[in-house]
Length: 525
Ligand code: NOJ
Ligand code: MG
Image 1: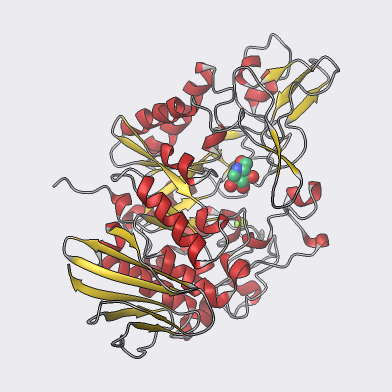
Image 2 (image 1 turned 90 degrees about the vertical axis):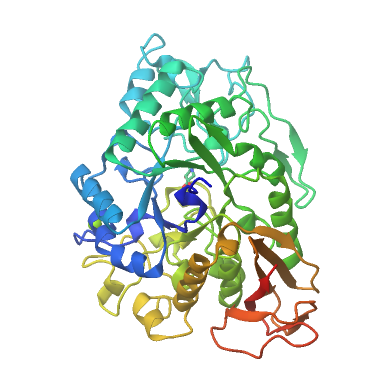
């Protein structure tokens, strides 16, 4: 059998560079800081890191507005710091993925400065320019993910440009082959330096309807409000050609992978497993975040995904990221332990968002201290909460910086800091470390066949099997005791979320305490 690609067995760890470790006292995390903390990541047992953007940027969207894709913003360091970080990762056997932002650039990017200079500019067609509608308004009804019309009027040239996100983030015109070539050159720049792949920002947005048809508007049954269905500006058929081309570029290098950020229902998501030219593109599955935290809803969603995805496609799971409230804030600290067990016992590549392994909750940032520019534009949409700096030690500013941190710490930093977590044998950190170690020891956990089991109210239970190895995972989503009826009499406890040795499986099944999850061995198939 051919050796499996590294991502089939890897645990990915997302770092938001602003918030991991500051090395120069400016209060903002940086690349040297990340390098200083690699020992910690190695001891946690993760296999690969993904860094959110560190490119040159005016920071209208904290780096997702790139003005130079081939340089490091001085806030984060230099190209030499990047090379040193990459080399240090590889020395420790860690893979390094970086964020590729190909859908849009910053308004300050030289490409856009050229494009907006005149209607006949060389790069005019590199972005999406349209005449106003007959009434002088925007060319169509498309709305931005950040609210309001997605069209920005440009008085100098008398046209609108399209932006799926902020007006400071104009969308590139992917229909133009010169744009695609330019993005592929950027990919090669980093692949040549040795990165192990890319997380691709908003990949389902790349292709837009060439006829710019209006999106349908429907009434949301839940809220009763009207909402736009993004039928014509996202998830268009051409996007698969673009992804295939990116695969071809990446496939020229050994062992690299592409992971796309995609918010779509499961039946659409599964089309985003693309294999081309010796490279794979894998879609992020965010349904553990999007679905209500209920055993049945989560179980059904995983089952749908597992039954539809290609057998040779590696799922990529996440409980959170820098755009959504942290898992411990969404579902509470007790259930966050159950969620950790779920994440790390699903086949595929689990993604740990930095700090979740310490049980970090969101920062409670007052309006006066808010940093996310989105908060200034749309009340209630700020994303500061999940971006709080890591708390490492009892030192001032939790050892994150010698200066003034750019953002408040998590509301529960007193417990959710590395020093406190290391002292407590039952801490969230101990649980994550044990789960990752268990996953390393079991091929069934990493790549087994997943089968949903019938379980009582509030319990999610599934079996994983691979080449004779059989495991049972039973997760109690409720806070009271539950018994999972199972035939598996000889089930052996491998790990409880409580990290103790509770009573063994009973004759009548597996007894779970409130908020408890267990992994059990069912022996040979
Ligand atoms: C998704 C990123 O995760 C988010 O932080 C950003 O604002 C948008 N893409 C736009 O790039
Ligand atoms: Mg710094």
